[in-house]
Length: 186
Image 1: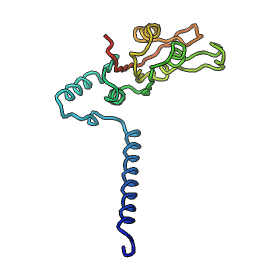
Image 2: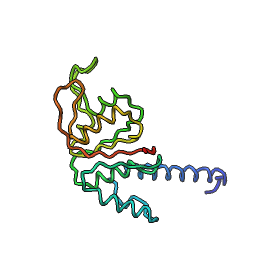
Image 3: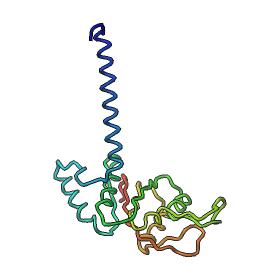
Image 4: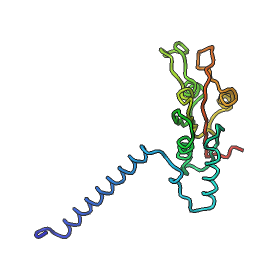
């Protein structure tokens, strides 16, 4: 490396290190988006986390509705995806953040609609609940929904059926619901 100053050499090495770190980060991110989550993805250094994983393994193969409580950023969606992946459910994992959805948008998003149900409804559209049938519907930030929406979800939980907007018939659905919130629901 004759004729190259220390400053130039350090700058070049710095660029190489940053590029390698960026490439490694991109590979890790791409792999995590493709690979299915596993219980081994969780850090189990505390008694609380080991107890948590134990409770996850107990509900993984039930069809029970699950409510995940915790602060923002603790991995509630990762837990929901892991529950779905480890379950015997054959359908899709469908995630939706329900925070800020008004009653009409919520109903159309989750229940779908039939052609002509409202201005602009030019064709039938399946809602996310029906798309998740046979699998898991993850409702993030469930603590932010209105009492009207809560009533509609109760029917889904109790009767396992939905009614798309503008339709007179109900549609049977077989979906596991996992909900999460960072709010104290009490």
